[in-house]
Image 1 (cartoon, rainbow, N blue to C red):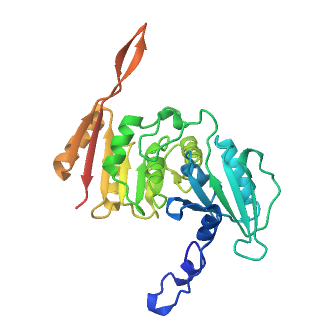
Image 2: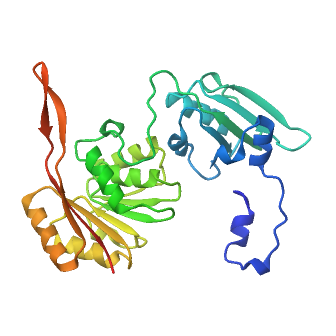
Image 3: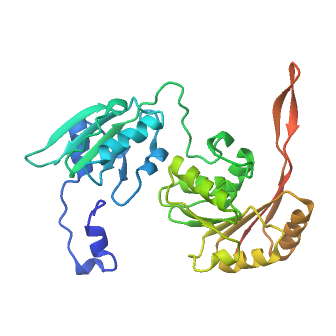
Length: 322
Protein backbone atom coordinates (compact mmCIF):
# COMPACT_ATOMS: atom_id res chain seq x y z
CA UNK A 1 0.00 0.00 0.00
CA UNK A 2 3.09 2.26 -0.20
CA UNK A 3 3.39 3.25 -3.88
CA UNK A 4 2.59 -0.41 -4.64
CA UNK A 5 0.17 -2.51 -6.63
CA UNK A 6 -2.11 -2.81 -3.61
CA UNK A 7 -3.41 0.71 -4.17
CA UNK A 8 -4.86 0.24 -7.70
CA UNK A 9 -6.01 -3.30 -6.90
CA UNK A 10 -8.11 -2.18 -3.94
CA UNK A 11 -9.35 1.12 -5.33
CA UNK A 12 -13.14 1.00 -5.51
CA UNK A 13 -13.43 -1.84 -2.97
CA UNK A 14 -14.64 -1.55 0.59
CA UNK A 15 -12.20 -2.48 3.35
CA UNK A 16 -14.25 -5.60 4.12
CA UNK A 17 -13.56 -7.01 0.64
CA UNK A 18 -9.81 -7.42 0.98
CA UNK A 19 -7.06 -8.02 3.54
CA UNK A 20 -3.69 -6.31 3.61
CA UNK A 21 -0.68 -8.27 4.84
CA UNK A 22 1.87 -5.56 5.71
CA UNK A 23 5.60 -5.89 5.09
CA UNK A 24 8.62 -3.69 5.76
CA UNK A 25 8.65 -0.98 3.08
CA UNK A 26 11.59 -0.10 0.86
CA UNK A 27 11.57 3.33 2.54
CA UNK A 28 12.02 1.80 6.00
CA UNK A 29 14.75 -0.55 4.80
CA UNK A 30 16.72 2.20 3.05
CA UNK A 31 16.44 4.59 6.00
CA UNK A 32 17.55 1.80 8.34
CA UNK A 33 20.64 1.15 6.20
CA UNK A 34 21.51 4.87 6.12
CA UNK A 35 20.51 5.77 9.67
CA UNK A 36 18.04 8.36 8.37
CA UNK A 37 14.91 9.34 10.33
CA UNK A 38 11.95 8.18 8.26
CA UNK A 39 9.74 11.08 9.36
CA UNK A 40 12.30 13.59 8.06
CA UNK A 41 12.82 11.94 4.68
CA UNK A 42 10.89 12.84 1.51
CA UNK A 43 9.73 10.19 -0.94
CA UNK A 44 9.46 10.59 -4.71
CA UNK A 45 8.27 7.86 -7.08
CA UNK A 46 9.51 7.81 -10.66
CA UNK A 47 7.23 4.93 -11.68
CA UNK A 48 5.27 6.35 -14.63
CA UNK A 49 6.31 9.84 -13.46
CA UNK A 50 8.90 12.26 -14.89
CA UNK A 51 12.24 12.71 -13.15
CA UNK A 52 11.80 16.52 -13.38
CA UNK A 53 9.44 16.44 -10.38
CA UNK A 54 12.61 16.25 -8.26
CA UNK A 55 13.27 19.95 -8.89
CA UNK A 56 10.62 20.80 -6.28
CA UNK A 57 12.51 18.78 -3.62
CA UNK A 58 16.03 20.22 -3.97
CA UNK A 59 17.18 22.02 -0.81
CA UNK A 60 20.42 21.94 1.16
CA UNK A 61 20.39 19.02 3.58
CA UNK A 62 17.22 17.49 2.16
CA UNK A 63 17.04 13.69 2.36
CA UNK A 64 15.12 12.08 -0.50
CA UNK A 65 14.26 8.44 -1.20
CA UNK A 66 13.54 7.92 -4.91
CA UNK A 67 11.60 4.85 -6.01
CA UNK A 68 13.14 4.06 -9.40
CA UNK A 69 11.36 3.07 -12.58
CA UNK A 70 14.27 1.18 -14.16
CA UNK A 71 18.00 0.59 -14.10
CA UNK A 72 18.48 3.89 -15.94
CA UNK A 73 16.85 5.95 -13.16
CA UNK A 74 20.02 6.53 -11.08
CA UNK A 75 21.94 8.06 -13.99
CA UNK A 76 18.91 10.17 -14.94
CA UNK A 77 18.62 11.46 -11.36
CA UNK A 78 22.35 12.20 -11.21
CA UNK A 79 22.17 14.16 -14.48
CA UNK A 80 19.22 16.23 -13.23
CA UNK A 81 21.03 17.01 -9.96
CA UNK A 82 24.17 18.12 -11.77
CA UNK A 83 22.23 20.33 -14.19
CA UNK A 84 20.21 21.87 -11.33
CA UNK A 85 23.35 22.90 -9.44
CA UNK A 86 23.25 19.99 -6.98
CA UNK A 87 26.06 17.94 -8.50
CA UNK A 88 27.77 17.73 -5.09
CA UNK A 89 24.85 15.69 -3.71
CA UNK A 90 25.57 12.23 -2.31
CA UNK A 91 23.78 9.27 -3.94
CA UNK A 92 23.34 5.76 -2.56
CA UNK A 93 21.74 3.25 -4.92
CA UNK A 94 20.36 0.08 -3.34
CA UNK A 95 19.79 -2.85 -5.68
CA UNK A 96 17.59 -5.82 -4.67
CA UNK A 97 17.01 -4.18 -1.29
CA UNK A 98 16.11 -6.70 1.43
CA UNK A 99 17.09 -9.72 -0.66
CA UNK A 100 20.14 -12.03 -0.65
CA UNK A 101 21.65 -10.15 -3.62
CA UNK A 102 21.34 -6.71 -2.00
CA UNK A 103 24.05 -4.28 -3.08
CA UNK A 104 24.69 -0.58 -2.35
CA UNK A 105 26.69 1.77 -4.58
CA UNK A 106 27.49 5.28 -3.36
CA UNK A 107 28.98 8.32 -5.01
CA UNK A 108 28.57 11.96 -6.00
CA UNK A 109 25.97 13.01 -8.59
CA UNK A 110 28.39 15.06 -10.73
CA UNK A 111 30.59 12.03 -11.49
CA UNK A 112 27.96 9.28 -11.38
CA UNK A 113 28.54 6.59 -14.07
CA UNK A 114 26.05 6.40 -16.94
CA UNK A 115 25.89 2.58 -16.91
CA UNK A 116 22.51 1.18 -15.83
CA UNK A 117 22.14 -0.96 -12.72
CA UNK A 118 19.57 -3.61 -11.84
CA UNK A 119 15.96 -2.67 -12.52
CA UNK A 120 14.94 -3.31 -8.91
CA UNK A 121 16.66 -0.35 -7.28
CA UNK A 122 16.09 2.56 -4.96
CA UNK A 123 18.00 5.86 -4.83
CA UNK A 124 18.81 7.77 -1.65
CA UNK A 125 19.86 11.42 -2.10
CA UNK A 126 21.47 13.73 0.42
CA UNK A 127 21.13 17.13 -1.26
CA UNK A 128 24.24 19.30 -1.34
CA UNK A 129 24.04 22.45 -3.48
CA UNK A 130 27.01 23.64 -5.47
CA UNK A 131 28.41 27.08 -4.64
CA UNK A 132 26.09 30.08 -5.20
CA UNK A 133 23.02 27.98 -6.07
CA UNK A 134 19.90 29.71 -4.67
CA UNK A 135 17.14 27.61 -3.16
CA UNK A 136 13.56 28.35 -4.22
CA UNK A 137 10.99 28.26 -1.41
CA UNK A 138 7.68 26.43 -1.63
CA UNK A 139 5.95 29.49 -0.20
CA UNK A 140 4.33 31.48 -3.04
CA UNK A 141 6.21 34.52 -4.27
CA UNK A 142 9.17 33.16 -6.23
CA UNK A 143 11.54 35.75 -7.70
CA UNK A 144 10.40 36.97 -11.12
CA UNK A 145 13.73 35.78 -12.51
CA UNK A 146 12.86 32.17 -11.70
CA UNK A 147 10.54 32.14 -14.73
CA UNK A 148 11.23 32.27 -18.44
CA UNK A 149 8.87 34.96 -19.71
CA UNK A 150 8.02 37.35 -22.52
CA UNK A 151 6.95 39.91 -19.91
CA UNK A 152 3.34 38.70 -19.59
CA UNK A 153 3.41 37.61 -15.97
CA UNK A 154 1.99 38.34 -12.52
CA UNK A 155 4.78 40.02 -10.58
CA UNK A 156 6.17 38.57 -7.38
CA UNK A 157 4.39 40.70 -4.77
CA UNK A 158 1.00 40.53 -6.51
CA UNK A 159 1.48 36.79 -7.11
CA UNK A 160 2.05 36.10 -3.41
CA UNK A 161 -1.15 37.97 -2.46
CA UNK A 162 -3.10 36.27 -5.27
CA UNK A 163 -2.04 32.78 -4.14
CA UNK A 164 -2.98 33.62 -0.57
CA UNK A 165 -6.47 34.57 -1.80
CA UNK A 166 -6.76 31.44 -3.96
CA UNK A 167 -5.92 29.44 -0.81
CA UNK A 168 -4.57 26.19 -2.36
CA UNK A 169 -5.37 22.98 -0.49
CA UNK A 170 -4.01 19.45 -1.08
CA UNK A 171 -5.84 17.58 -3.82
CA UNK A 172 -7.57 20.65 -5.27
CA UNK A 173 -7.66 21.77 -8.91
CA UNK A 174 -7.08 25.33 -10.15
CA UNK A 175 -8.02 26.81 -13.50
CA UNK A 176 -5.55 29.55 -14.48
CA UNK A 177 -7.36 31.45 -17.24
CA UNK A 178 -5.13 33.61 -19.42
CA UNK A 179 -2.06 32.04 -17.85
CA UNK A 180 0.64 34.07 -19.65
CA UNK A 181 3.91 32.79 -18.18
CA UNK A 182 2.15 30.30 -15.88
CA UNK A 183 3.40 31.82 -12.63
CA UNK A 184 0.13 31.41 -10.71
CA UNK A 185 -0.41 27.86 -12.01
CA UNK A 186 3.13 26.76 -11.15
CA UNK A 187 3.16 28.26 -7.67
CA UNK A 188 -0.25 26.72 -6.90
CA UNK A 189 1.15 23.27 -7.73
CA UNK A 190 4.39 23.81 -5.78
CA UNK A 191 2.39 24.23 -2.56
CA UNK A 192 1.65 20.48 -2.34
CA UNK A 193 2.39 17.47 -4.59
CA UNK A 194 -1.32 16.67 -4.90
CA UNK A 195 -2.33 20.17 -6.08
CA UNK A 196 -3.30 20.17 -9.78
CA UNK A 197 -3.81 22.93 -12.31
CA UNK A 198 -5.03 23.49 -15.85
CA UNK A 199 -3.54 26.60 -17.48
CA UNK A 200 -5.53 28.06 -20.38
CA UNK A 201 -3.52 30.22 -22.77
CA UNK A 202 -4.56 31.36 -26.26
CA UNK A 203 -1.01 31.90 -27.56
CA UNK A 204 0.79 28.68 -28.52
CA UNK A 205 4.26 30.08 -27.76
CA UNK A 206 3.19 31.03 -24.25
CA UNK A 207 1.55 27.66 -23.66
CA UNK A 208 4.82 25.99 -24.67
CA UNK A 209 6.76 28.31 -22.36
CA UNK A 210 4.43 27.47 -19.47
CA UNK A 211 5.30 23.80 -19.90
CA UNK A 212 9.05 24.54 -19.89
CA UNK A 213 8.71 26.61 -16.71
CA UNK A 214 6.64 23.88 -15.05
CA UNK A 215 9.22 21.18 -15.82
CA UNK A 216 12.14 23.31 -14.60
CA UNK A 217 10.35 24.26 -11.37
CA UNK A 218 9.36 20.71 -10.46
CA UNK A 219 5.66 20.53 -11.43
CA UNK A 220 5.71 18.70 -14.79
CA UNK A 221 2.13 17.54 -14.25
CA UNK A 222 0.77 21.03 -14.98
CA UNK A 223 -1.61 20.81 -17.93
CA UNK A 224 -1.29 23.74 -20.35
CA UNK A 225 -4.10 24.01 -22.91
CA UNK A 226 -3.58 26.22 -25.94
CA UNK A 227 -6.95 27.67 -26.94
CA UNK A 228 -9.40 30.51 -26.56
CA UNK A 229 -11.48 30.53 -23.38
CA UNK A 230 -14.26 29.79 -22.68
CA UNK A 231 -14.39 27.38 -25.64
CA UNK A 232 -11.22 25.70 -24.33
CA UNK A 233 -13.06 24.75 -21.11
CA UNK A 234 -15.03 22.00 -22.87
CA UNK A 235 -14.43 18.54 -21.42
CA UNK A 236 -12.18 19.72 -18.58
CA UNK A 237 -12.77 18.65 -14.94
CA UNK A 238 -14.52 21.17 -12.71
CA UNK A 239 -12.14 23.38 -10.67
CA UNK A 240 -12.03 24.10 -6.95
CA UNK A 241 -10.61 27.57 -7.66
CA UNK A 242 -10.25 29.86 -10.67
CA UNK A 243 -7.84 32.68 -11.34
CA UNK A 244 -8.69 35.05 -14.18
CA UNK A 245 -5.54 36.85 -15.22
CA UNK A 246 -6.52 37.67 -18.80
CA UNK A 247 -9.87 38.66 -20.28
CA UNK A 248 -11.24 40.08 -17.02
CA UNK A 249 -13.53 42.49 -18.86
CA UNK A 250 -15.14 39.69 -20.92
CA UNK A 251 -18.57 38.96 -19.38
CA UNK A 252 -18.97 35.73 -21.40
CA UNK A 253 -15.67 34.45 -20.00
CA UNK A 254 -16.65 35.32 -16.44
CA UNK A 255 -20.08 33.69 -16.80
CA UNK A 256 -18.47 30.46 -18.06
CA UNK A 257 -15.99 30.46 -15.17
CA UNK A 258 -18.72 31.11 -12.61
CA UNK A 259 -20.85 28.30 -14.03
CA UNK A 260 -17.92 25.84 -13.97
CA UNK A 261 -16.98 26.65 -10.38
CA UNK A 262 -18.44 24.34 -7.75
CA UNK A 263 -20.29 25.61 -4.69
CA UNK A 264 -17.72 26.74 -2.15
CA UNK A 265 -15.12 27.36 -4.88
CA UNK A 266 -12.96 30.49 -4.92
CA UNK A 267 -12.58 32.90 -7.81
CA UNK A 268 -9.89 35.57 -7.92
CA UNK A 269 -9.57 38.15 -10.71
CA UNK A 270 -6.91 40.81 -11.16
CA UNK A 271 -7.47 43.98 -13.19
CA UNK A 272 -4.95 46.52 -14.46
CA UNK A 273 -6.94 48.72 -16.87
CA UNK A 274 -9.72 51.15 -15.92
CA UNK A 275 -12.20 49.19 -18.06
CA UNK A 276 -11.43 45.84 -16.45
CA UNK A 277 -11.48 47.42 -12.99
CA UNK A 278 -14.98 48.76 -13.72
CA UNK A 279 -16.18 45.24 -14.53
CA UNK A 280 -14.79 43.91 -11.24
CA UNK A 281 -16.53 46.70 -9.32
CA UNK A 282 -19.79 45.84 -11.08
CA UNK A 283 -19.47 42.12 -10.33
CA UNK A 284 -18.57 42.86 -6.73
CA UNK A 285 -21.84 44.80 -6.40
CA UNK A 286 -23.73 41.81 -7.82
CA UNK A 287 -21.94 38.82 -6.26
CA UNK A 288 -20.27 40.24 -3.14
CA UNK A 289 -16.82 39.13 -2.04
CA UNK A 290 -13.76 41.28 -1.33
CA UNK A 291 -12.45 44.11 -3.45
CA UNK A 292 -8.98 45.53 -2.86
CA UNK A 293 -6.27 47.51 -4.62
CA UNK A 294 -2.53 46.78 -4.43
CA UNK A 295 0.05 49.46 -5.03
CA UNK A 296 3.67 48.30 -4.86
CA UNK A 297 6.83 50.38 -5.27
CA UNK A 298 10.35 49.04 -5.62
CA UNK A 299 13.51 50.96 -4.74
CA UNK A 300 15.66 51.50 -7.84
CA UNK A 301 18.87 53.48 -8.36
CA UNK A 302 18.57 57.05 -9.59
CA UNK A 303 22.02 58.51 -10.10
CA UNK A 304 23.95 57.81 -6.93
CA UNK A 305 20.84 57.40 -4.78
CA UNK A 306 17.64 55.34 -4.71
CA UNK A 307 14.04 56.31 -5.40
CA UNK A 308 10.72 54.51 -5.31
CA UNK A 309 9.50 53.32 -8.70
CA UNK A 310 5.81 52.37 -8.53
CA UNK A 311 4.40 49.35 -10.34
CA UNK A 312 1.00 49.58 -12.02
CA UNK A 313 -1.82 49.41 -9.44
CA UNK A 314 -3.73 46.11 -9.36
CA UNK A 315 -7.39 45.82 -8.44
CA UNK A 316 -8.26 42.38 -7.11
CA UNK A 317 -11.65 40.81 -6.57
CA UNK A 318 -12.05 37.64 -4.51
CA UNK A 319 -15.36 35.82 -4.17
CA UNK A 320 -16.54 32.42 -2.94
CA UNK A 321 -19.41 30.82 -4.82
CA UNK A 322 -22.33 30.07 -2.48
